[in-house]
Amino acid sequence: MDNSFGKNMIDGIEAALAHERLRSVVGARESMLVAYSGGVDSTLVLKVAHDVLGARAAGLLAVSPSLPVAERQEAECLAAWIGIPLHVVTSREMESPAYRANGEDRCYFCKSELFGILENEAKKLGFASLAFGANIDDTGDFRPGMTAAEERRIVAPLIEAGLGKAMVRAVARGLRLPNWDKPARACLASRIPHGMEVTPERLAAVERAEEGLIGLGFRQIRVRHHGDVARIEVAEEEMARLEDPALRQAVSRAVRAAGFRYVALDLDGYRQGSLNPLKLLGDDGTLLSE
Image (tube, rainbow, N blue to C red):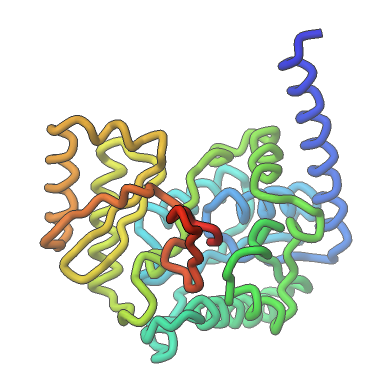
């Protein structure tokens, strides 16, 4: 037997078993309102909730300056494709001084606002369970938002079913979700270093810069806001593209057009949570923790 065939078969079986575990976790709930962003994690929860619970499931999309317009449009189209009701609401975390101050616990205040909205909507709409799309890989990262979820007893079906990011993508691919391999984007506020105030203007600058890079064909990117300087992170496999002088100039123009004065390329490339606290470096300068 071809080794790749055997591996693909095993991977397919594991994904099918993970899918069944997730269906079982969701099916144990009477009804479910899912905090949905359009990312692959929450999309998978939304899809399985729709498949298992039918009319007893719906999604909630919170809109604020930290959500790119293109992401909102894509999320709405995807929910319509799934065929599940989507409730679009306004999130007002920008009105919180603690959120704008952008301390290391910024995500706590953002998620507290989101989950408060989720609770209120669930009461009005008659949903018994509230869910979000955290997976088991999220439990090992610096995620103050997880604390907010625990406080409000928001369930995480992916964690309960034992799914990490790789398995989430495998199950989503098996279900033919269009975004199964979509790069993680996270909220725009994650591009602003802790201690620098989160403002609508800074979020908009990051959004314009990142959309410009996506328009140039980059998939996994971050534009980190350092005042006049934009620090660009691109995936390792895309780094070689920047050897082209013409493309580098196009990148520079796109980022400067977003309002930045200087454009810098991070030679370490894209990495999740690069602005998180407690970065540890080994003797050789390599990153030991994220």
